[in-house]
Length: 100
Length: 277
Image 1 (cartoon, each protein chain N blue to C red):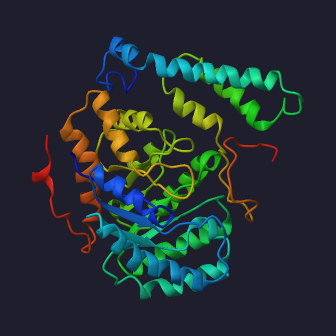
Image 2: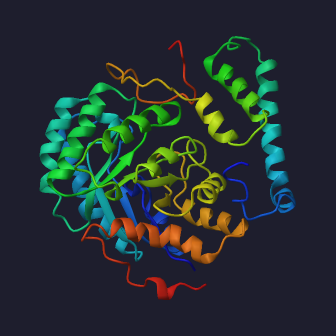
Image 3: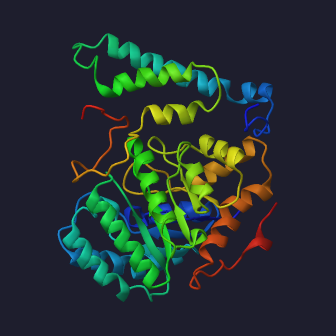
């Protein structure tokens, strides 16, 4: 039994009635983004670490079991433990570049 | 209208209209951690100007709309790499700690999780301990969040001087909230349109981890952000069928519990009995 089972006070039917449409559009937006990547004028980011991580995240999304958000967060995260010797940049990319 | 406290709002980056919107939606108090200006400042004098604004101009601007303004002081994690600048700013901070709206040291923490950032973070903890201040902690963004939060939590948990209940680790998400709560710290959830937690996911975290030692905030700043994100969270709580009592606990009673550990934090003028339920 999932430790968080029963923590959402709405029934599955209530969740579907209330939230299906807004999440339907999010799925379509993801599909449209991937289609856009495919029909781009230049195929120059097929192996971009963000796209690779994105596709791995989608596999987690479609996998069995709960805690999908946490699992996807970890797919996108730097899981190393040693501090960097010095700052290399200020901002973040949204996915960890293992070769970066 | 349910009153709320936004525990993390960078009002120096917002217009007076935003104070008005927050007041109109029930905000009665906010706390403003010191943060990054979007560029690295070139001298400690720039921080003196900033600290003066946080402790003088902003409280007056907020008061025009009936909002109590409190603040936290530090050199933020994004500038923590510059150890010389950090030392100059850290030397300056004690001069401001007695000002009436200063609640503690923050938002300190890590950005890219470097050795210098960690050293500056520890220096700030030392300062907070020397002056018996509350601590407000920033955790890194996106792919750096898990690593940075783990280093921060491990460092703070290993420091016997720190009482966990006097420290808030902010910007928690699904993969970091558990380690924060399990170590006895407060957890802050910040509501951002794209880079942090949506109102819907914030409600999920409340449902999964309960309402003890958790606050929500807008963390509105100069980037894409929403000053009335806390009322949006409240609306989402109602949509999910949660009670007004639970909503009030998260957006008012919890911030009061954490912030009241500073003697300078005084309850807004019209507390619980003014809430229409």
